[in-house]
Image (cartoon, rainbow, N blue to C red; front, side, top):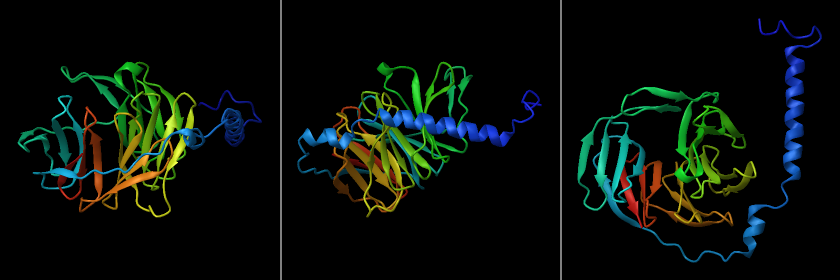
Length: 283
């Protein structure tokens, strides 16, 4: 058994206690490096002006809740999946659509051509709800979030978790890398979005208001990284000033939970998907 090598006076409880003590000391050392908060640095940054966006196109074709979507690299097509079992490729300019096959996946790296599993990633204690690949120039890593309230950064080559963050109070529904790859944002059922700096190895900002009581289901950054778009379960999209932590706009239009959103590759628009069976393009 694994406990055979333990000394007689060492019990599982004492080892857990020692682990918690070491964890506390690590947090104390971490805290010593926290010399300034993001919002304090942002005081010297000019505030954002009036922010206006509206729906430019509504894409209808799904027969059930839209669960996931993303932009293609051509800056024009959008791919969406739904609880109706369909994946649809849309032309966001004309609304033409093509019906294709659907698939499923978790934290696993696959060879698309051969269908072989190259690497699996184990570490979450519950369902993994989201992941995002780091920008290609920053290395072979990705971040995941799940029902265990953890956000974990992984090395795709080794399969190991290299950083973990546990500050949310409920399920993490969405994670998204900052454009530079040095940070990432998360959205959670605890009604907050959070920003984590990977170099500082800590949470640096919380985006929340007392009036927001519904969970955040999806997040994405503007191309510059100054704005964070977040879809919520109350049918709204909130737009946050990343540096100052202030909400700069609320977008209305969906008639059910906003389940997914993505900024276009050129940054001129973003698309949101909802349980109301539609996608909306905003600009």
